[in-house]
Length: 131
Image 1: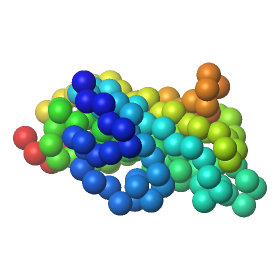
Image 2: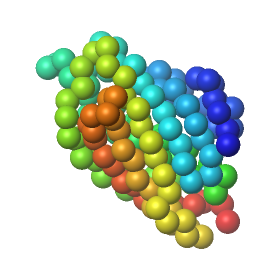
Image 3: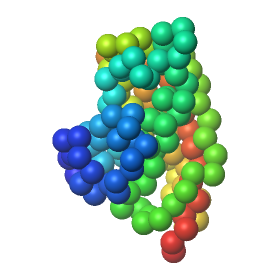
């Protein structure tokens, strides 16, 4: 298991994820966990977390769950379900896992919570570029 304290140990630097301040908590082959403390920069005009923040967090977490299974890969499809709104000051935890790992296609899923409240779910398909 690889534990990271807000760093990029074992995960390539990603300026966009750093801009959002998404923190990698746990990354191991087949599973990953991130968290994000919501600030005003993450909000939409109605003062709830912008849907793009959920998308970026889910994509990064599910992608991190692939680390150790493939070196180079890219997202080819992602599906998000927004369940509950999230406000400034709350902390989202995202847990991603690999559902199926083929030689070229990897299917993943993610669950996002605030404390014990489910706020969003996601699934994604990744294409392996190295073999």
